[in-house]
Length: 110
Image (cartoon, rainbow, N blue to C red):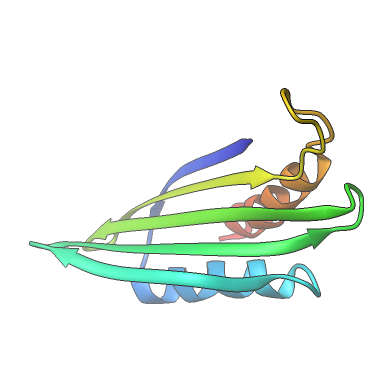
């Protein structure tokens, strides 16, 4: 499992679109599996679950993305899972790290 957390500033909808495009365009096999958007008071939140095939690991990996925001103050949390081929402990997590690196590179450019 790998995790990325960042405090960001900007337009919520534009940021969500850019992050979504970075993930989906970062791999031929990346797909958006499901999503949920909601607002509580003045706080907006978007939850996304992506999946892709990892050629390095020969398996599928998942990435959850949560973007929360109030005004132009945003918080991003992204966590990957899957990719391990062992039964009782994690080995071969390259696919998870590579999936998260795709998002991290995009966030660093924002």
